Picture 1: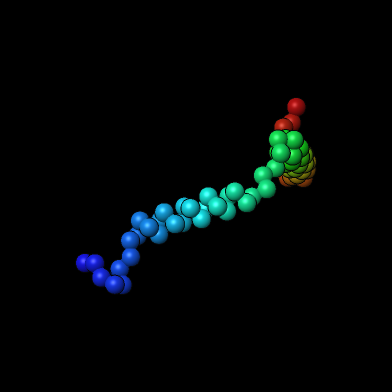
Picture 2: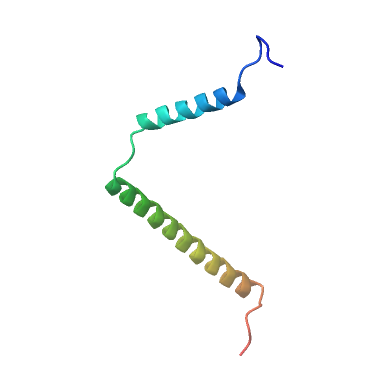
Amino acid sequence: MKGPGRTNPWGHLRGFFLEVVTELKKVLWPSKNEVITYSSGVVGVVVSVAFLIWILDWTFRTLTTYVLGLYPHA
């Protein structure tokens, strides 16, 4: 059923991808140095927060065990 109101869906898809390529050419991509610097910062923060959570978990577990009297008797 071809008529005046029908358009080619493949043409729309092709147009979409052409626009995507055009927009990606406008992007200011980070340099290798920037990627390494930012990635190192993210990894450092993640490790720091994980260490903090581990310390808090250990502290609260120890305190809870002591307060509830669940520590092993020698």
